[in-house]
Length: 129
Figure 1 (cartoon, one colour):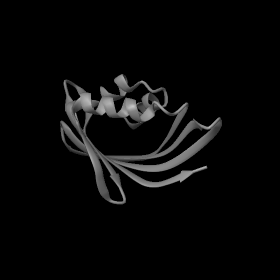
Figure 2 (tube, rainbow, N blue to C red):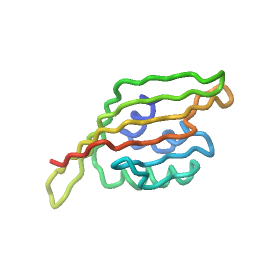
Figure 3 (tube, rainbow, N blue to C red):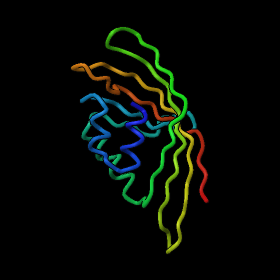
């Protein structure tokens, strides 16, 4: 699931990306161990994801270690790591930023498909070149 999320992020296919969430899915954006903002439901998640990627000409996610712990037949918890590179133009120059992100997820099996019910996106560090 994390790989699909990253693949869709890199191609800016936010419609497919958002379908990985339950209809009432929640995304918490966390910086410095504090929730910066919360997105509720697919429509809000789609609007935020699409808007945040508009300024970047290139997006690259490298998915790393992922663990999943099954709670029962329809619920699981997971942790996944991503190295994210974002490239945009500023005053005719390419500016690259790099981020280390840890996703803490709650998954739910809906109609035979595992979806993200809640994602806590921890932005652990950020560098700009």
